[in-house]
Length: 474
Image (cartoon, rainbow, N blue to C red; front, top):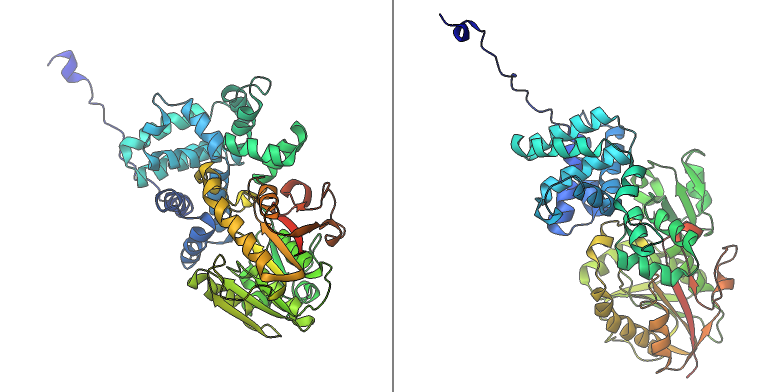
């Protein structure tokens, strides 16, 4: 017997079946839905969580972690892409999207959470073995180990260009926004570096869940009284707002289940209140919400109108969204009407209304806290697509209101092309005067030079809602 034959045979490592972690699998499924179907996380995630909760091994902490993994990964996608690109030997576009989603989930655990490094790598590699297979899991393991060698600040110093060399590109990488959005937000905000950094950072924070007590059906005190002091606080600015604590479940609130309250950002509430309280000469009996879907502002306006003996007409082009408006208004204490109609070709006569709200479709750049994936889908060309519709709807609004009546032009975008440019262009063609909207936001600071109002996440804790109030003069 020779020497080689006497050596004991080396036995390979026994195969270890990957651990299927329901939290990370759910997070991966949500990210794939966002990527493959252009879905929104705030629509995809709740049904996935409801289904998971039906299983005994998925509790509230699991739901919180899954939510953080999904939204944290989406918010920081640009930063993580730059870091991952520095750790792979091919262009990022050549990495399969499911692999990139797993890598991004792992990067967020390593760089954006307090999960220990070993646990983050191990759990993500197990996820890769479950959803990608053992071969690609080895690639994931190698990349994550490279990422784990540095913390987030060190990585940003490596992958982001210096601010002095390219300020916008630096901010885009550091704060995970496309460069064109950084530029647009900076133009709208004005000022120096501190303000834009604060705004971009606020876009990456998890927003509070804010409820609205629908006028005539509930009050903020009613809702606060039904909740304990640790789970809810009054709104900062709106008398109808209630802020829920982190992890609060709106569906568990009786007033929400019964339709007496809803989920609505405080900025949206303020816009509706401002239009309702704008000074008016003459009658105040007929109100219009010309782009009413999905119904949040319409429900508030209907309640406020009822308190004054006025009637709201809520119009929405898409029939299924008109159905959502009708559901939101059901139970309103006064009369109202909901119709499905194209706001650019309205069925009502000119000069019919005393107050008109036109909350126009837009890029949604003011709500990036809530829909972080939108920042990666929008393109500058989208502005050109919305421009004719926005101008057409504002022209309709000014034609629909009587002389002396007031139009509120609102949009959830701070982009100048969707705000002041639209108002200025339309007022060159139709007779109207801008009213100073700032006094109609009592107690709200930092409202600028007016006469229009732009709210900001970092200054007001709201979405970046815009409102211009216009009185028809002829």
